[in-house]
Image (cartoon, rainbow, N blue to C red):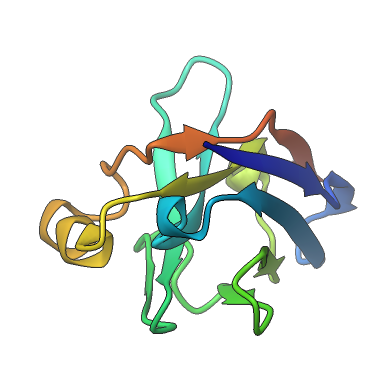
Length: 130
């Protein structure tokens, strides 16, 4: 099992910056990939970014160039730095982990937008006002 606890959400004006953090605990082999997905009211869930143990990263087209995912050396904390935020980025953001050793291959084949991680946290709200 993996436990994931997000922090850092909040409200910001359009064009602003927020950094989300997520502390992951539990078995290392259940954390081959770490990532973030989001869901806005009335919309489908959307994978946003992912990183694997080798530090390969991938991003949704909608956030590429604006969001950056990173981890600490121990691969226990994952960050999502969000800049140039737009009102359409408003959503509940969930930290996620996947145990599949080939998770990044799967993510790149499916597209991060559609990938469903094996574990997720409780979520943190991000609200961007215009």
